[in-house]
Length: 171
Image (cartoon, rainbow, N blue to C red; front, side, top):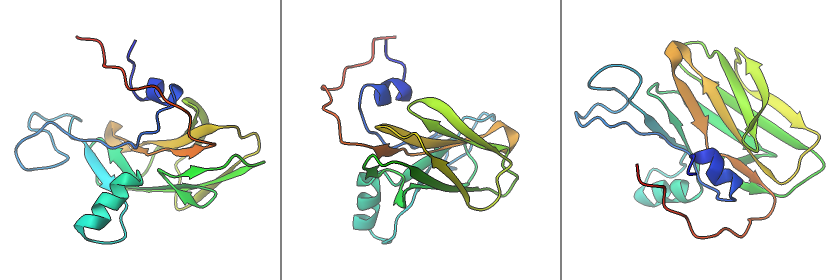
């Protein structure tokens, strides 16, 4: 069945991750009805122009939150989120998650499975994977108030041949 991003990654797709809300009241990241339903997309771009924005989206230099205006920055072997890196004997993962309130934890997800969790991270963190394989890594951060943030993955290894996307089953 169609199960979302983990199934897409397992099938060899290489998407970027972002979030969005369903509010139409001009207040991004909030919900008209309250609760945690207002998502935000974060975009790491260097050139403040339409071309710079499009470039960041093509590079998958994007992340999402369930509403907080948090900063998520993630790299593997110096390659930023959304990138593809070759398989190596070891991979160095660096990340930081910044929010106005304390961060509960940040989990690195490797190949769809929780790999390492850092409790209450502050500033830049570094982890080393000594058993890498063709895979993907991304961050999942637990923020204050039950909110979450996700980085786009960094992909390791060659781009797989991927079949055309299947439509999700009807509801």
